[in-house]
Length: 350
Length: 165
Picture 1 (cartoon, each protein chain N blue to C red):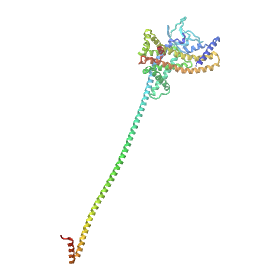
Picture 2 (tube, rainbow over the protein chains, first blue to last red):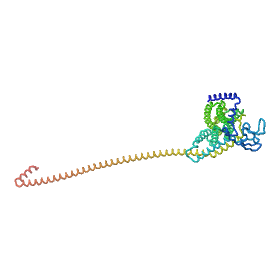
Picture 3 (cartoon, chains in turn green, cyan):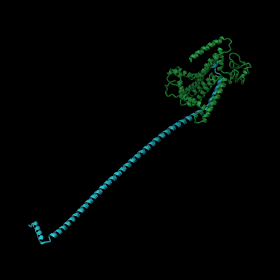
Picture 4 (tube, rainbow over the protein chains, first blue to last red):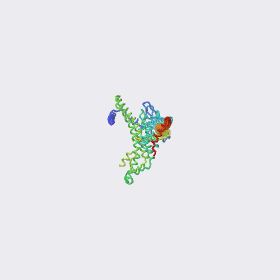
């Protein structure tokens, strides 16, 4: 893996030089990749196959709803519309000038929102049909889609929830199942050709991480807060004299979901960037010969990403379960330093 | 800030609303029924397994019961047979001893009666012999003592024999 990365890095740096030296080359891989992993007001499946998405704006002019295609003229050039302009993938008021342009509240159905709605539709289709199947073959062996998802649901219940949360696991099952399948489905949708990079979007992972944070904080019991503000096994002056321990522990509350947010975002975005970079090589070298190499590497990466899609969904769910477990755990021994997860806590104790 | 790591308010609002709706609806219409169905099925399986185990134990108990009954019956049969043969032997023995006793008694009785008969016969023979002897003697004496001389000789002989003193 390291060798491949070194090789890739070498190629990329070489290609960057090549791109620089080729004056007037209109292909910029960086822009292309950023455009692909970013959000957009249209869904660009292929050249000529562009689905304009609705723009919903709320601001000085009240509520405005129109199709994003209105921002483009016949020559695919940007143009202002209804007093709004689109610049660098954002919508601003046409009359605002200067460094910090002002824009209305943008509630547009962007590519990411559309992709999320699609995934939600899929989630409903799949799991409502499975729930129906459970009703239909009540007490019987699972069949079809049901038998594919049942082991996964049981795995989440037995290996993630029961082992990490303990006897109170039942309460958290709906959330754990929802984030697992939400992340997994969206990871897979993102790997589809033309798919949006939804789970590689910091906003989406931020929301998921904040949900986990809120559930953790609101289900924290006496022993959880006791561990944070009155950490057992720590000299008193570190708690009351110089409150380093409570400070570290409080920071720990936020670093855990922060790591969740960054981990998912970085893993998925990195996968997209690598695959897009591999394809960019063809255009950078402007050679058909490099095509098979790129395709071979990209295929390999795609398989790896299929695995990463599942793995990241699993890790997000597992770590969330661990944080919940730490919040509801009952401590019998006050000098017991073991939390559910806790590289932070262990570091803090030493 | 890099747009890649800048949260977008619009997407955030959509994401929060969508995710909460998904969580709510899936919880109500998918996760709860699925979890309940899974639990129910697992309980059923557990129950079935426990019942099977119980049935197995019951079968074993029944089998051992049957075996015990069979063994008991066998022992009973043995005992009855033994008793019967013992009784038979006893009866035969008793019959034998009774027969031999009876035989002995009859032999004894026969012996006694034979003895008696013999005695009676001997007495009769003796009496007969006495009578005959007397008759013979009478007849002899009658013939001897027909003349006077002989009578006197005899008397003389008796008298000599008697030794009057």
